[in-house]
Image 1 (cartoon, rainbow, N blue to C red):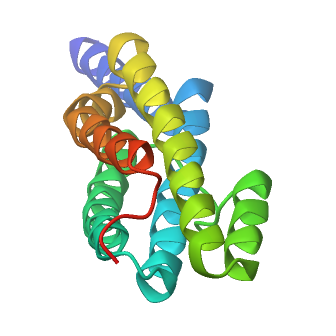
Image 2: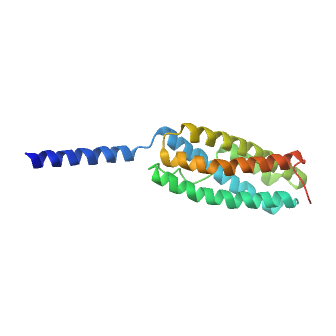
Image 3: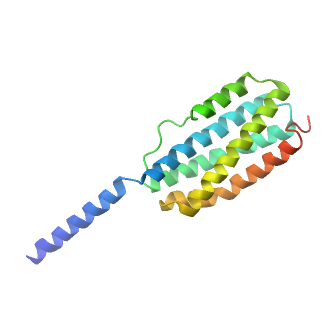
Length: 173
């Protein structure tokens, strides 16, 4: 009888752990989707900027965005896996971000630079807000740790693009 109770307890514990690991909270899934889209947008828009801008400062900023967001993307994938969150579908920008990318692809010269700076300002304001909220209130530990760790980098990016914007968005040609 004692052996049956121990076995039953082990089965119940294993089942409880498995159920807890199977389903991530909806807020974690929502964050994963938003972060994947935003990160992909940052990389794709910055690749365009690297190729199209005549501004050395914007080219340097774009390269840093590509490097930092590629690294963050890898760390994010690890956090998503640790949190048992289903990875978002193939990483792609959301509808608004796709529209912004189309606008950037059609812009040339200083119009491109201004559109890129505006897109980066908006994207980083949104990212900082999202990451601050999740770092403070997130319920999924690996994602909360990722948000807390990544937030200072995003805040630095925002400060950088704000400084570029104050100069008119196109410095040192």
